[in-house]
Image (cartoon, rainbow, N blue to C red):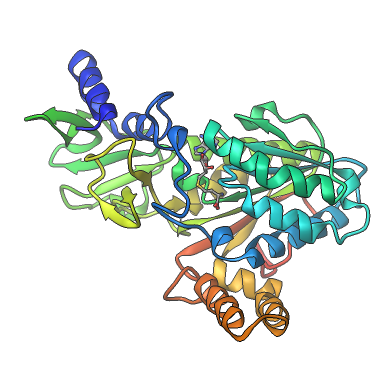
Length: 363
Ligand code: SAH
């Protein structure tokens, strides 16, 4: 057992079966042993779009600068990133967005990050570029609640997949919370107390077979709702990019990754990345009462609409033959259906009257 698994087992002995959401929150965020708290996992356990190519952050930077222009170039705008990892996306975005005259001077950069290790990395990556491009020094916060009022442009790439989910398992006597227990010195999944979750069940949950799993992400829905309310009150936009599905459905998507390979979810808490697919239908439902939700599109269609092919061609033209191949391979990896182009979805939430680039018209 890992150190954190022993701590979890002790808590289970003291207080009983632990909901999956508590297990996931501890595995990722335990103050001493949580996966994100203790390390920089990018590049070893998994990689992300901004780490694959600078084009990703550049296109998003241009997207953000365009939103600012559509907002009427306000004197102050908060450019916020949720879960910025190594800061690569923000650094590339600032470089591209600073081409928009006036943007750097108006922008306050706010990084929302819980990991002290990653905050240090972000500081080293983002602060020098912010300074070189004429932005005020970035600030760091642990929650969006700390953001000051004012127009907002929010970017979240692979953030929502790291938020704790609840799972429910279908049994002969109804849906029960899925929990974690200890058995023979190992952590195992068990059904918890019988309950009917107070959530809207997707249609396929009504006659699900015993053993089927249903997931909800209350933390994600709450953040989407709060962002939408702030955007409604102060204008702005949020861009959410993640792997997941556009329709809620029954299915177990909880997964753990270590050294680039899938490992059993309960085996090495604190030492493996644990994520779940993002249910965009639920995020959209949480945001829609407050403001406008633009229909989710795929990462492939989004990046192609923003001009990734043209950007790759321009970069390749000035590169060695070997680098040109790498640039084109990266563009393909980000957009191809059999790579990241289709599994990853992109959703925008905006105040009324904005036309976020890369989204087909319609809501
Ligand atoms: N966006 C980055 C990193 C994705 S990994 C990229 O695309 O490369 C997930 C990021 O979210 C990490 O920076 C992690 O520390 C952060 N994170 C996870 N849970 C969080 C929480 N509850 N609040 C703020 N940041 C969180």
